Length: 116
Length: 150
Image (cartoon, rainbow over all chains, first blue to last red; front, side, top):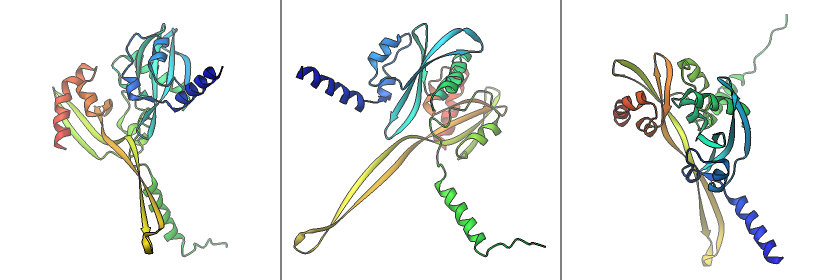
């Protein structure tokens, strides 16, 4: 019982101290499932939501909104999934400049729904 | 007829406020603040929405196209250092302790590129050099040359 309590306290402590950093972003790979992403990163997303984009209204995209910690500052960081597969991830400005217009649209739509 | 009088100190106070506001205003753009940028935006919309003005504007011609490059300072990190100094009185007994915290913003150059006054691409130099966009990748060496000569 004492061991379980101690483990819970340690887990809570470690979770509260961890943050999503560039090293986490670098571990992500295209095609990863949401479960794989959650198992890979140090800290999970602050916000998870589904979006649809005007050019593909029948397709749903799941967005994970992370807070990226960068040496004293933080920045919004998004991961977009389609069919439970990681499609693209990055800062919102990276979504917007990508050559594929679908990624641009996902970035625009995600920013509308994101908690900023 | 009522005539509004302006206090003699109105001018200096206004000037002081202006100086204060300028000093406290942003000195760089951030990852979050450039989220509004979208391909095809006109140059004026970009200027109106950026936190700061560009530090340089350069025109390059490459493969028959003319591109305008603008440089902006982009905050990429912030570090905090704390220094503590002690003053000692007689017999070497510390009397006062002064702690100074210095916050340093680290910036890198964000290169914003227009073609025909429309936003074409933006990012740091490495983003151009490894761009997924073949056209950007093709002109990256010319952008690099300008960037290194800057």
